[in-house]
Length: 100
Image 1: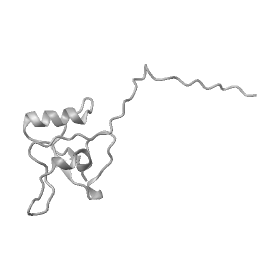
Image 2: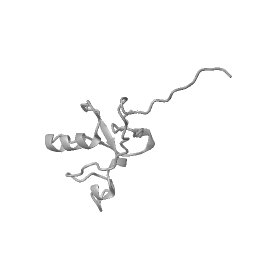
Image 3: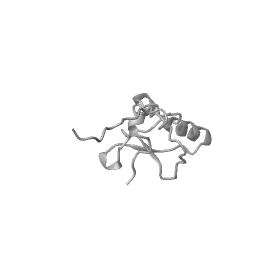
Image 4: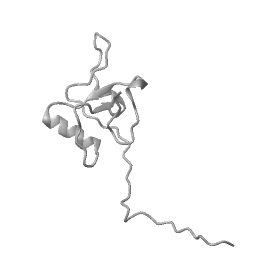
């Protein structure tokens, strides 16, 4: 069952959302991969990105068949990347283990 390849996105195909394959064109594919921002990640042929990452204007309007289809030049732009601190920069919490 396909699920979204974006970090912190837990959409799965069973939720009724649209899922899009990454473009085959190497230039557009590289743009999508950069936008997805997953460190040390190489997408597989099964990698998908859900509709949550595209604004409405990225879809073709007024299609006769009523289907939602991405425009040929669509680029994902909506992500919830968390700015995680490196382990060195995190605040340490010290817990006292003494009994009173």
